[in-house]
Image 1 (cartoon, helix red, strand yellow):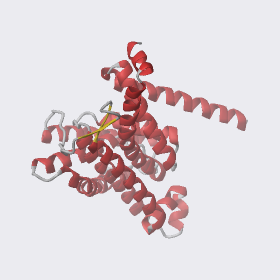
Image 2 (image 1 turned 30 degrees about the vertical axis):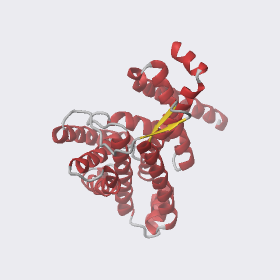
Image 3 (image 1 turned 90 degrees about the horizontal axis):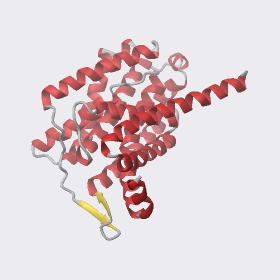
Length: 299
């Protein structure tokens, strides 16, 4: 209650929490859009989404250790993760396309465990940060502080989202992805190689996660075993926004970031992740209630 009183009596603190929440929310939205893409096109819920984000973050760490500024890791991580995603599709994912969605959940859960152990073995179990060295922006006489790397991450996430939309609308592969998402059988009849589309879609999702991970490594922290919260957040955002709804994904991602930041201040940072999981339960119950009402209307 004391922290709620502080928020009510000092709106500038609330503003600081909301602004910082919106900045991390943009990264949540970027990872979620990749999940929505795979879910919509391939009917696969990718439980390894968070591990893809972490793996992209370790690309930034490795480049930083090698003396290369971590900002250059954003395109490198995207390209690296595209290859990883493409390879994982041909090794595992192609076996579960068009199968029951529960099988895809088990398969990608297995991938997530393997990636966690691999990252822990290669990079250790410590929390790591790729220092971008950009400093902090002070607003309103220093009452609101925004790390410049978070502002830059927000801008880059926005640019990547716009670039993805243009790619899906203008390029032939993007149009093939959209056609496959609408009706895979009809797309095959029209001569679209849907296996190639599926591989590209999964690789594209991994690339988005890789770029997101490089930004997370600079703006926040990464660890081999904190990928799951990013998966949960992505899943929740997609459930709220719906498949194929980019504007909804962005709005839900920004809202989640702000809500999570305020909850962390009110409840304490140790309960911030618990708030995310509780919110997921609330969202699923709400979604099920809406679907039940819709089924009653149809009857």
